[in-house]
Image (cartoon, rainbow, N blue to C red):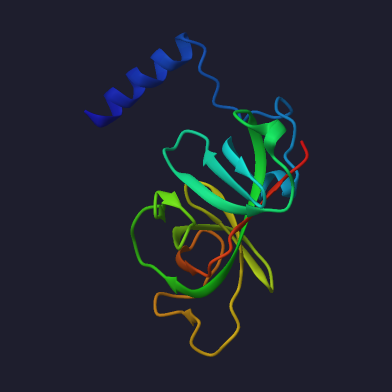
Length: 167
């Protein structure tokens, strides 16, 4: 029965023009700086501080900023959120979230999309570049090593920063 249903579905897809070949060359390749950045809106800008709302979320992240974002108010921008971690936990299961919803991010849980010796890039509701903590008990590896696609929970220090990434 499953095989018959699968064949019928495949025939329907073929009639509708379903192409099982991978898409090649239709989209421009993204650079690593674009992969490590989030799209969103600048909701409010004050001297030294900006409120960033990631695209398609209700989060409003209050972040430190060195630039003046008054001209970007209400516009879609691509930016990078940088945090310093107090502690990082490996997590066996769960979802992606940022806590609190309004304010400076304190807890970030998401999947690792990139890592190097000093930073990891975590995809939660936004993409965060997390500076790894130093110390003996700052990284909890009870649920395996931290690698690409691993689920981590980051407890962040105060002072998350935001910077615009050029397109």
